[in-house]
Amino acid sequence: MTSQSADYPVRFEADYPESPSRVLALLGVLLFLKGLLLIPHIVILYVLSIVVTVVVYIGYWAVLITGRFPGGMFNFIVGVQQWSARTDSWMYGWSDKYPPFNLGVQDYAARFEADQPESSSRLLALLGVIFFIKWVLLIPHLIILVVLGTVALIVGYIGFWVVLITGRYPEGLFNLITGFQRWNYRNGAWMGGLTDRYPPFSLS
Image 1 (cartoon, helix red, strand yellow):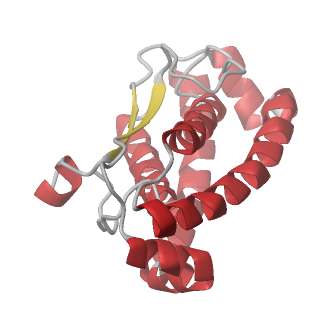
Image 2 (cartoon, rainbow, N blue to C red; image 1 turned 30 degrees about the vertical axis):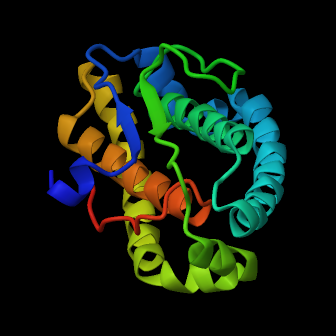
């Protein structure tokens, strides 16, 4: 792990599944069945993502005026990301425990955390208000993440087959997918104003 990644204020961690369920792996192989079981989460998270977009935009204005991202808004965004992390974890087969419907921190196989800064950059908040400028600054990351995301989907599907046959989740595949998720969450956190530190180009 590079020093830039090690002390980054946004973290995503997942526990390696020691003995994943073959039944749930079969649902993963049939893909759409696992997706169907997640429909309630997908619908709620879609609505929450719209709310988060509005909250982030208001948060940028608050930073422009006060120099600080409002704590309640910050915690709400983190809570939605935690919910999303748990849902992703179950979909990829890292946990056999169906994800809870909850914004808060849970004892679960995947965890998203972010340290709220004492103050936030008004310049970056202005870029966030203009919105598309921050996306432009993330283009190098977005190109890499599109490729990594495609690879993660393919190897995730392979992982279901391996679990079905062997009862074990390939550790290399697990590390690759969790690395992609970590990278993706850090980018989302920077775009959402949770941190002013530009995300590192790293899976770790």
